[in-house]
Length: 95
Image 1 (cartoon, rainbow, N blue to C red):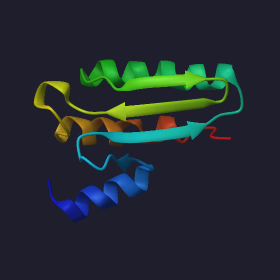
Image 2: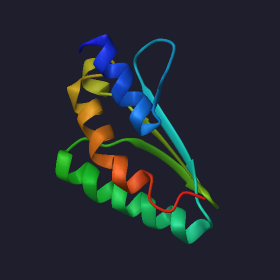
Image 3: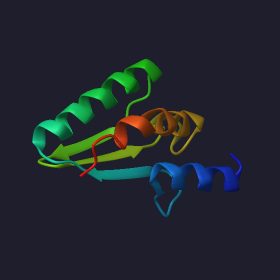
């Protein structure tokens, strides 16, 4: 993947890359638990449609995601495509 394009795409979506280059991470704050849960449910539906699933942590007012392709031992095109597909959902109703 082209490094410049990768950096632009991550910056637009608020994703950061771990120092080892194997994982993309995103975190957001929401107004309450129910709003965070709704976002997680929408993430799940999109992830299913892509057959690629992030690691998800959430609780009262927050959601954290980690994307990596476990079978490949790091980032692949699948991760960037899912990050792009999640952009609208992740930035809806952020506190």
